[in-house]
Image (cartoon, rainbow, N blue to C red; front, top):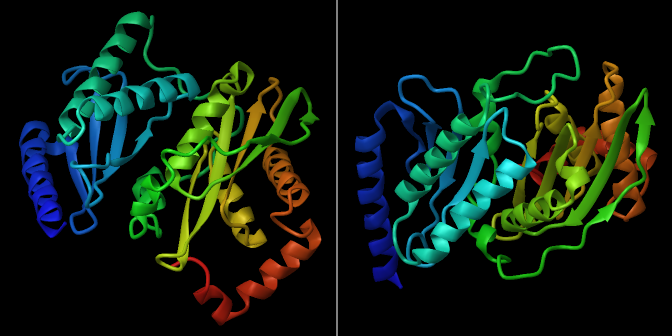
Length: 315
């Protein structure tokens, strides 16, 4: 066992050294000790139009028995494209069990971006700008993604990969000025299951075609006694963070909520956040992840005033 871990670590060191040499400034070390890295990938070095960022966490079992934990980020990346890329990466892992695969992942993504540039008449279409621009620091993206217990508890990501996709339930839609919002909920116990749920949802053409699919999840790790959590705006600036904040106030765990929004052409202003959170709150209460909206909010306020309560939540 110890020999295998040492071999994995040496393989990782050799692979990272090679990738750093190949990709230069596009390769970034986020946290050497936690084995967290990212790389910017474009369709062209001279005139990059299609670009995304691949972030990876390398577990001790990689490359012998486990894949890297990864996240794909780009303003234009939507459900169908995201699912296609995820399937490519998973196929590469399965076809090369025991081998280092990050170079193959990067080049497959680049191949995908090159194909996108050839088949698209113009550059990437960003998420539909449904609302006024709001302040949001994109430089904090990596901090939001990795600065939580997922870094410490990343082994949980692979515990449930062979299980069936968690059951997904759908909430009642809310409509306002031709925009429609609908929440979807699933119990999750690992980031791997989060990805399974997203892939399953994107199989639904209506959900995949939504203007935004905002999501957030909170998973309690018994190993670290802390929460693994993350969120995604999907083009609706700051919506994911607000959704995650709601779930923190409600003190829910082992669950993810996705809120789909179909934009109707009329700006809603701050009301859109009200509808997103109301959809999420309703489905969480309906399925007993929180007692009631009023009681949960009171609980959240009481908890925020308790230092002891804070110690029992995020680390």
